[in-house]
Image (cartoon, rainbow, N blue to C red; front, side, top):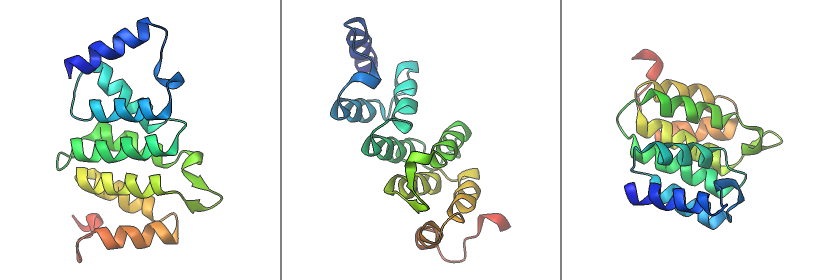
Length: 144
């Protein structure tokens, strides 16, 4: 929204930037910008997806999935693909919940997101099982 962009600009002028805010504020900015296509909000959503706090990254993934549901939005798919692979989104070889949120977002976005999600899900037994559980039975994006 225009108000969110204005408020963020004012916070930036006051010396606050996204990375230095408390995680609760970063989460609030992600939520406030979830439905906006303003340049500032686009940056905030991207920063959220790569935030230092796991909960902020997960929230950004969920909101991107909702924002672009059914659109096949290629830039969002690329961002989610990159974010999935960030080392902080797994511990050892175990996926953290943000990876499951990213898979859900890719499914929601659809289009190439289904192929990307399926490919990413193959990385672990847990994500593969999760992907199978969220995909309608008989739906294989590789065959489409």
